[in-house]
Amino acid sequence: MYLSMLKIKKTNHGFSLLELLIYVAILSVLVVVVSNAFISLSKARLQSQVRGEVHDSLRFAMDKIKLDIKNASSVTNPSSGTDSTLVVVVSGVDITYDVTGGVLRRTEGVNTPIDVTGNNIFVDTFSLTKISNTNLILNETTTAIQINMTIHYNSSNIDLLHSSSFQTTVTLP
Picture 1 (cartoon, one colour):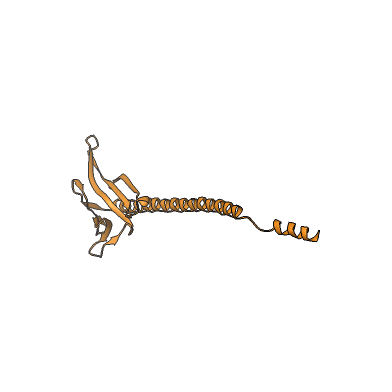
Picture 2 (cartoon, rainbow, N blue to C red):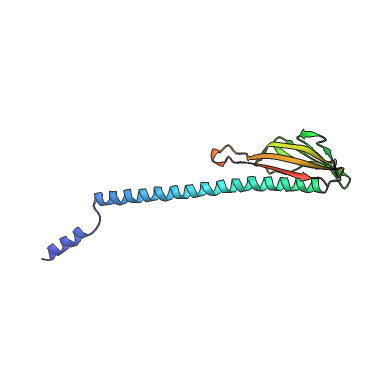
């Protein structure tokens, strides 16, 4: 009788090889599912950061340009038509905006140019159009600068490609 109880205890301990394989297979499937979820979340977070950086850079550049135009006593360039360089005179100092190597730069007088857009941002389009509107009744001319700008995130990773465009018109004081 003692021997038969011992046999029962021995047969109740441990797993069979088939049970172990089933548990490992279920666990493997769960690990793959959870890993894919973390990878997808990480990719989405990175894409969101890229979009934010593109939009923030575009907004910052446009706000900076609009502020300089609003404070300008005159606009030297574009003189008429469309150009890719903006030159305004603010407090007697020439401020120049231009694109070199895909980077929007701002230069005050003869100082060294300062990058307006970040390292990962590439400027595709930067065009400025001077628009004049004459009111014959009041004999007044209103001048404005239309700004078109398109930028994209500079990455070789296809998942991080994002571009944004912005167009605005700023009336000269």
